Structures are given as C-alpha cells and as structure tokens.
Image 1 (cartoon, rainbow, N blue to C red):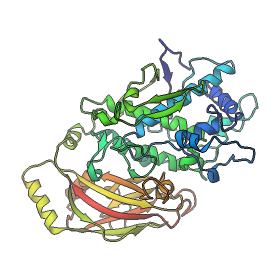
Image 2: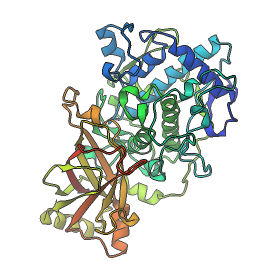
Image 3: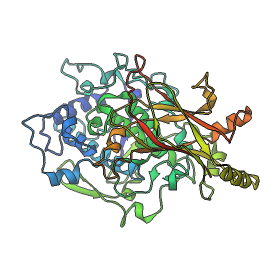
Image 4: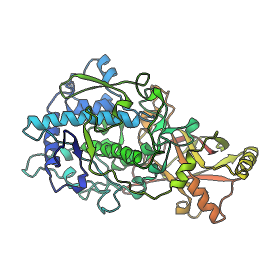
Amino acid sequence: MKPAIDGIRVREDVWKLAPWDDTLLWYARAIDSMKQLPIGDSSSWRYQAAIHAYLRSEDPFSSSEDRLPSLSHRRRFWNQCQHGSWYFLPWHRIYLGFFEQIVRSHVVALGGPDDWALPYWNYSDEENPNARLVRPEFLDESLPDGSPNSLAQAERGPTSGASGDFGIEPSDTDLSCLRTVPFRTGRFGVPSGFGGPRTGFQHSGGVIGDLERVPHGAIHVGVGGWMGAFETAGLDPLFWLHHANIDRLWEVWLNRGDQFQNPTDPSWGAPSGTEFEFHDATGAIETLTADQVVDTRAPVLSYEYEDISDPMPTAGLAREELIMEKGPAMLVGASEETVRLSSTPTSVNVQIDPTAMADNRAALAEGEPQRAYLNMENIVGAERVSSYKVFVNAPENEPEAQTNYAGVLPMFGLVEASRRDDPHGGSGLTYVLDITDVVDRLKQKNEWDDKNLKVTFVPKQRGQAGAGVREGARVGRISLYYR
C-alpha cells in the first residue's frame, strides 16, 4: 500500500501488489464488516450495491427479516447507475469515490490505515501475462489467518475455476476506445463517442459509448454471475476494481493530447446538468455534478492512479483527427427485418440504397475525410446472453475471418434495457462500431463491395459449446452510415 502524499491517496494496480498485500487484506475485512450491517444502512454492502441497481427478486441475500428503506428513499438513492449516457463516467466516479470513503471508514474502525485506497484491475496490460486473470485473493476461500474470505464470496461465471480464467479474451480488453476523440456520441450514434451520448438521467438503454462497450461491458459479461447484471454487479468485490480501471482509462484518454477533452456544454455540469445524490461515510447526503469530479485530486475525491501512461502513444493519431471533422452522417443502407441472434452464427444482409451510395461516392471524390459506422439499434432480450463478435462481409466458409472482424457487442444491461417499465419503454441497447479500418482492410484485398453488406453475429461461447448463449436476443435494425 502506497502512503498518501498531501492527502492524495494512490489507487494501485492490483496485479502489482504482493500476495495478500494489506490493501487486499483490509478490503476483505472491511467488506465483512459492511456485510454485518442491515440493508437499510447506507454504509452496508447491500445498500452500496443497490445504489447501482436493485430488484428484490434478483437479490441473492433477500430475507424476510429485511427492512428496506421507504419507497421514496429507494427512488431517490437506489437504481441510479448511468448507462448509455455522457454521465456514465462521472456518475461512476462519484459512486466509487463515496464507496471508497465508506470502505476506508470501516478499515479505520477495524484498526487499519486512514489512507486506504481502492486498487484497480488493469486487465489490458500486455506486459503482464496474467492481466486478464482474477487475482487468487478473489478466489481463495480463506484469508491467511484461516477466516472466511469476503473477496471470494461472489457468484461468478462457470469457467472461473481455481485459475481465475473466466474466458476473457484480448477482444474483451481491447483499448481501441482510446482512439475515439469525441467524448460525446453524435446524433444517431455517429460519430461514436468515448463517453456516450448527451442525455438527462439515464439508468439503462440508449446508445452505448465506446469505453462503456469495451472493455467495460465485455468484462462484466466475461466475469458473469453477479457481475453480469445491473442489480447484482456491486455485490461482487471485483466490480469496484473493474470500475476503478474504467475510471483510470478516462484519465489515460484525457492525457493523450489536446483534442481529447471533456464536454464543454453547460448542460453536462452545473448549473443545468443532472445532480447526483449520495451518502458519505457519516451518512450525510452529498450532491455533485459531473463537472465537479473531472479532477481526481480535488478535495471531494483526493486520489490519483499509480499509472496513467498511454498504452499506445503513437497509434492512429492521424486517423483520430479525421473523427473531429464536421459534417452530417449519411445513411446509405439498413436492414428491413428484426434479426434474431442465437447460439450459432447469424448473418443478415443490409439493403444499400444506390442513390445514397452514389451521393456518398460523390462526397468521397471531393476529398472529404470519411469514416464508416455500423449501427445496431434496439437490441432487446428477456434473458441474459453472451457477448457477440461482429464480422462484416465474412466468407461463408470462414465466418470469423480476422480481416472481417468489426468488434464485440457485450450484452451487459440487455435485460434491464428491454423491460417495458424502463423509462425508455424497453427500447433496448444500441451499439455503434466504427468499421473504417475493416473497410480499408477489405479494400486493400479487393474484397470490399459497397453494394452488398453482410453482417455476421458470432456468439462468444464459454465452457461447453453453447454455454451462456440462449435464443431470444433480437436486433431491431442494422444500418450503415458514412461521415
């Protein structure tokens, strides 16, 4: 554990800690302490998880002895997580900040250090061969003294085993999101944005930002179990390390260059932006807006990360600048029917409008910089399913050809965004893939045909064939845009 300097605590890479480092020991002890408190106590483990989302039928610890807070209290403080929104990053930063404060208060009450800080899980570290594995401390049944280990008391995916391998692949930890310059997603999802689209309060549904898609959503689905659902994710101690890393990647992105900037729109922060309420470690109510937490060293947060170095400092900067170019998005084609995904590869042909494509060719001839975007809209489903890999114009005999690979669609939040009682009427998830690089690769091989677009969805199966994949997920529309 690194000591705080001038009151600024250091969040460390969990894989760089010694076995059962004090950071992890005190985390485990504090969790156990928090679990002893009733769900109505804002410092309890279950209350903290319920802030993200809560559904009584999904609560693995529900008991007839529970005394839930009043309905008005729950509406005010529970089911608050922001997804598919430009508030995704700042809301989770605030959430983690108060959670860290509460954990630290338990650590101190147990006799631990007053500068305890939450570690982060850097699963994208290419220099660490174990990066995508879960640390043994989150798998061991006991602490070094033989007492039960609260870090391991979570339901996770079927392929975890003692090795900590959850079937998380390089595609799940890819950091291509760092190449996305705009923070905010544009109209119709074009261009795709690093942080998400402009919204008000947005608990679920909508267009998913690049960082929220991968690695955020992919890791949630990969770990599975409680991590795979809004209502139970916060019950897994890994959730907090995962989101600490997502928060760290926001800092990495901001440090890439002058063009990587947070929103300057007044409606993102005070005075017209959405306010978020939380309880601090004393139980007092604190209210913050997005613009108040852009600096992690500010008094309200007082932390920094051990490492925010750029993992790809020379990658694609010229291409990124093209994303900044202005101009309306041009719809050139869309699917005509709902696409039902299954446990086997599913392909669909997207109808290309010849007139729109001719207009696009004319714009291209004039030398306008251009990118291609694949929108997959209104993805709904009643059951939790695996992530899907997406391929463009893949050969029939090789549906997973790497040249044709476009990206991953994590289905984290699918069920929540599909419920008809959702504020957005169950409109589901919408993903945007920047497929410019795929198109370029196919053009170089003379394999790109802009008159015909075939999109193939391949389920990411874990364990036995078909495990974690069910019938039921549907894509409302697939469309191709140029910009």
